[in-house]
View 1 (tube, rainbow, N blue to C red):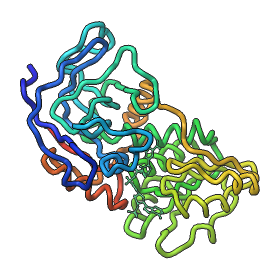
View 2 (cartoon, rainbow, N blue to C red):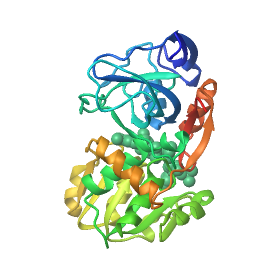
View 3 (tube, helix red, strand yellow):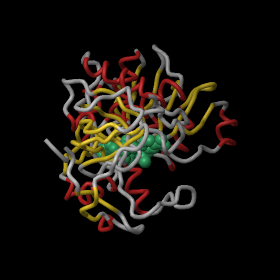
Length: 322
Ligand SMILES: NC(=O)c1ccc[n+]([C@@H]2O[C@H](COP(=O)([O-])OP(=O)(O)OC[C@H]3O[C@@H](n4cnc5c(N)ncnc54)[C@H](OP(=O)(O)O)[C@@H]3O)[C@@H](O)[C@H]2O)c1
């Protein structure tokens, strides 16, 4: 039975990590088509500190108080009216829509609202994956997959440059691209070079000492998880007719046209089927999640400070229950 009152992190106004307040709130109740999940682990995505700082307020204003978090792994504790696809007691992972920095969260599973920002995704958690590892998949592996294979149309035998190859998205992207049979080049700082090699990148460039455009040319695809001048310089290394897919700001179309390349933001929304595909690849040993660091729910502000630093390997996770 879920508790009547639960612990959750809530934000009441835009600001720094100190705005993440640990509070007692009533346990949410699953509505029609929703499930209640006892959260064991929540992924900490960079989007969450950006949202907290107010970076998205022009186009996605917050409704305060707001519980951060979307990537989740936990156990279904209750099902709402009309839910037939999940059962109480099942261990699940995916993307929840009502905030995951909490002991319990609700999310819609039937019918899933496949709309940007509000879509939910849930699949059964494979036994070989811990809750903490499973919380790294939504917003990391799912985005790496759609950006590479849907938006980027990456094929076996092609060459791909992954900017930010050690990060929560990049570390999965390297492994997926290698699994596909592509030749992988990754950029990272010196501290993470061995890690990115071990993930499967054939060439690893230390961005702190080597401008990548001096050593990389004519790739079929750049996956840009960094943005800014890294994105702009990345245009130079794509072969004519090739692609650049970015998770950050819209690329300059005049520059892309001049160079004869396709450059766009990632746009494909992941599906629950993709969660199952990724779970299978992990189960078969082709892909491995990486936990950057785990924090308790009480330590959410420390987790945000680390995420905001923009450095590290793999995904930061809040470990909320054993
Ligand atoms: N639009 C979308 O759908 C979407 C989805 C997911 C993520 N995103 C965005 O994509 C970005 C990456 O997300 P993430 O979850 O992978 O972030 P993350 O886990 O914080 O990883 C960031 C990585 O970037 C590396 N890095 C920093 N500066 C670099 C540089 N100049 N060149 C190469 N690597 C560099 C860091 O490696 P070192 O420690 O070695 O420096 C770190 O591993 C974030 O801005 C996030 O908001 C967008």
